[in-house]
Image (tube, rainbow, N blue to C red):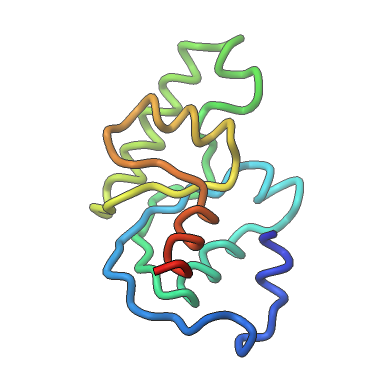
Length: 127
């Protein structure tokens, strides 16, 4: 979905109303490294009217990394705490990501709503 929406001509996407929603986006390692789509979702979210909070060290892993969080729980927790701190530093109302493993892992480290970015976009388009 990410690549398809990114390739869509601007005129084919619904207008970008100001959402009034400041969000932090966590780019999963798979999106950044395996798919080489780092920055793509952030660009789309901005085009669609979301205000993106700055995330220091945005390129760093959240600690989920597939089975990593199970096999290395102590180190995984430290990575999670650092990532959540970075995501919350820009005072977002919610955290968005693109990977189910990251979403579940991030949810264990914060009281902020954590959801897939396409859910937030769907909600915007339905409003």
